[in-house]
Each structure stands twice: as structure tokens, then as C-alpha cells.
Length: 91
Image (cartoon, rainbow, N blue to C red):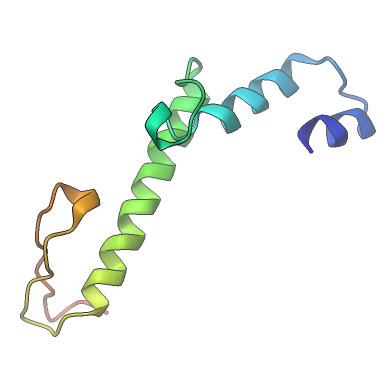
């Protein structure tokens, strides 16, 4: 899809297309998480970190919704099996 849009916009064979491809292919970082390649440019590494934070924040939010204020979540696998406290300022 990226190649198709790049061609339509006149960016065929431009370095920017290769950089965007690399960002998309490497954002999971590890092969066992679905990436065929680790990030090798700064922007790809930043996207990896942003994606990682986003996914962990989503899981944490879902787990906090399951408990009452003043309670702890169960162990959360993607957060090193830590438990998190739901305080009274939680929304």
C-alpha cells in the first residue's frame, strides 16, 4: 500500500519511501513480536517506544477498569506481572 501511494504521489524510488517502510517493518522491535527487523534509524526507534508505551497504557487502563477504587489490579503480564493501585483520582 505504501508503494502504491508513493507511486501515485510521484515518490517512486525515493529514500523517504524506504525510510517509511523501515519504520513500519521494525516498530515491534523483536522478531517474536512480529517485526522482521529491529529499528536502524532514530525515527523507527522512537515509533517503537511510542507503540510500546501505548500498548502498555491500554492494557493498564483495561485492568484498572476491572477493579474498584482502593484496590489493586491482578498481576499484569505485559507490565512484568506488577499489580497497580486504583486511587481515588482515577477516572
